[in-house]
Structures are given as C-alpha cells and as structure tokens.
Image (cartoon, rainbow, N blue to C red; front, side, top):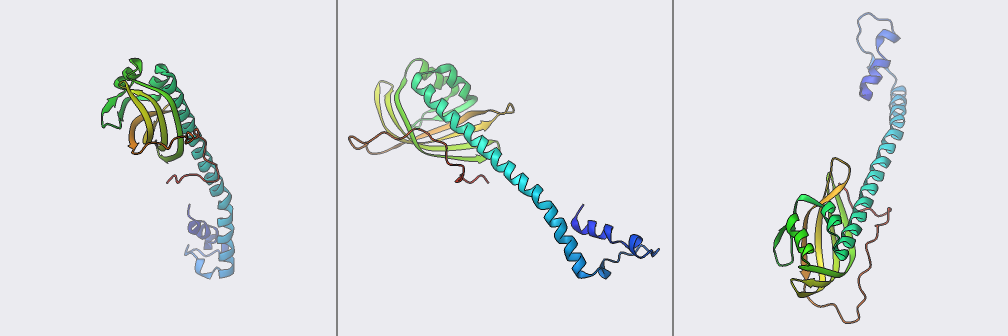
Length: 208
C-alpha cells in the first residue's frame, strides 16, 4: 500500500468526522500533521532498505570471492596438467580462443593438456578485475606465461578475458576464454607478476 493510501485510510472522514458521505477530508488535515505522518512513514522504511542494501553488497562480495577462488583453481590445474580439475572448471559448451585465433572446444582443450601439446611451467597473474552481471562473471587479467605450446617456447605476457556462468546448483563454470599476446619481451631480470589476490572489500568493482 502506498504512503498516500495509508494517510487517506487513517484520516478518512468515517473515523474522524462521522459524516455519512464518505468524502475524504485529506484537504482538511493540517499540513504540519500531514508532514509529520509522511516523515514517520519514510523513517520507518529506512532500516528495511538499508538491510536490503547491505545484503546485496555482501552477496556480491561472496560471489566475487568464489570467482577469485576459481581463478586460483584454474591456475593450479594449468600448472599441474590436472585434467579432472579442468574438466570440472569448464562448461560443456566451453569455447576458448587462443592467441593465434584458434577456437577450442572443451574436449579439444582437455585433449591438448592430455597430449601435452601445451605445457605450462610458470603462470603469474596481476591486474585482476571482476565484473558481475547477473548470472555472468567477466574476468580480465594480465598474465605472464612460461612453457611450451606445440613444442615451441611459450614465454610472454598476455591479456585474457574469462567468462563464468552461474549454475543452478550455485557454483560457477568457465564458458568462454580469450587470450591476447602483448608484443614485446619482458625486460631481463624483471620480477614475475604477483599471484592473484582478492580485491579489498572497500573498493569493489562496479556491479550494475
């Protein structure tokens, strides 16, 4: 029921003047009383709205923490050639785009790990950004990779985009992945990029 309807109901002539016409007498209500009533109703609604807002922020923080944990799982599975773990991380309709523009299905990605067509020995991340859009999480990051791909040395920095889809069970799976090579070699002696870290709760990425 709207605030206006509540005020009319409480100050109808049936309960105030005893008139039989049933004509609302809201116009006869002193402005001071009307404003006090309106203010009281608004103040009463504030705690509920504030609690909803806090619950929404806490839910987003929990979802973001889940995605960060999955990024760590993907990192570990890639370094250990852990096919069962990667199988759980990737959705059945997964599609990945390599730095060469090749498109890989889930079966093809797992097969490349199984045959060691790609072998990663070092994988460090930084500049992690997570955007939550309903049932989708979009992750971008900077990665430095060492290893072999099709028997060719793999050494360089890459920007990647990974997309997670929320499952009815409450978990997340990777549904899309794309990686882009950053041209130019890393300067000799440069330190590797730091591992993934959870962004501070006080500075959350926008979650419109």
